[in-house]
Length: 283
Image 1: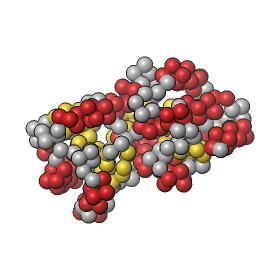
Image 2 (image 1 turned 135 degrees about the vertical axis):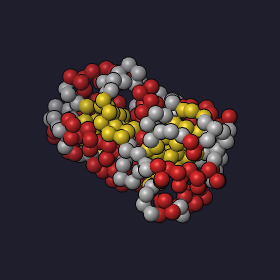
Image 3 (image 1 turned 30 degrees about the vertical axis):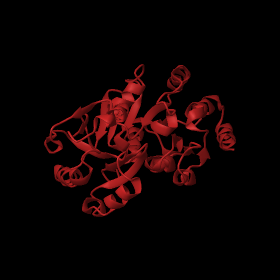
Image 4 (image 1 turned 90 degrees about the vertical axis):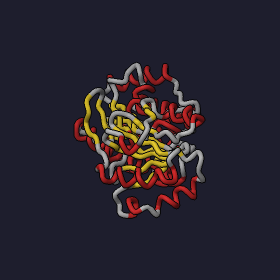
């Protein structure tokens, strides 16, 4: 059997709408994956500490491609960390605070940061997605390596906001890339530092080829990863753009889609059977 690495997106894919998953079922699967030397990777736009929180029982035994590919960990070992230059961070912060101060979240190596303008009613949502979050007096004085700037779009018209961001000089110049990670967030990331980029480091470390990867996602920030994988899945609730590049389709994230796909990997006895089962799952 050729699968050596399973990479899963979290929100809208592995997790249901309540940010939960069938932990008992997955932990039993994980033991089988370990026994077969199949690596499990949580690949997400979420910060590292949020991902670790979801997998508290095995957090040091799995790998992470966090912050949309900028922060890569293998258990407790840091594999890669990419960040903006301070000049680019200063330019973005100076600009974004003028119009979107209550929506700006700086994502760094040590945690995430919000300014004093953020409304108290926004905190339940932010605390759900950012498990290490600090409110500071001045975002311009944050002392951390910034790998991503996230904008909470709750208080803005999404289309108007994205159209405005497209006009920004730092995006037009290619210094920053804008992606939607879903659930009312827009991420400004380091160009070319996407989830597939992060997976490359783990592949080299583990000697895994693209055709030996199974990846599954639901949104814009999963496209490169799903395209890269020999077995690329989009969940039923995925955006059309991802479904267009995915070789296979899984069930809805509310139906334990990822766990069903993992069962396919565990139950297939040959490459031919794996392909057949993946095709059957897509019907």
